[in-house]
Image 1 (spheres, rainbow, N blue to C red):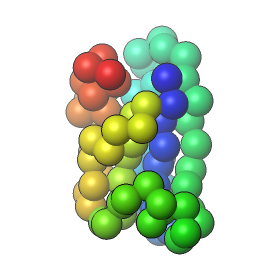
Image 2 (cartoon, rainbow, N blue to C red):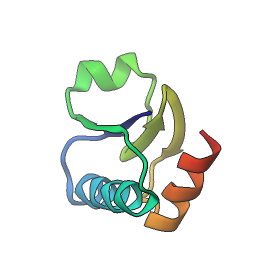
Image 3 (cartoon, rainbow, N blue to C red):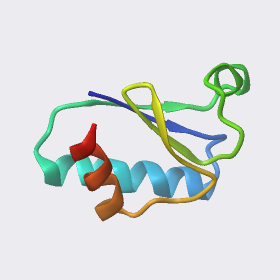
Image 4 (cartoon, rainbow, N blue to C red):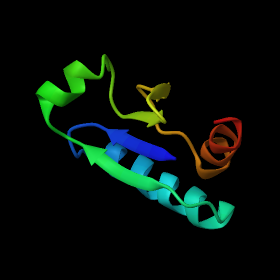
Length: 78
């Protein structure tokens, strides 16, 4: 599983990263968790609002901070 946190590194982006990391740890799953902060990469991914969360290439959250529980549920669906 590949999880991308997309954003410029703002407070909300950092909070989303923290929530995703916590959800990953609690779920016991193995996944690659990465940040995408480069503007050109963000545009290439088609993200229009940050912070955003992408799981296995699918944009699942955009323009808001998802909490840990929501992220865990999204990981289960992926």
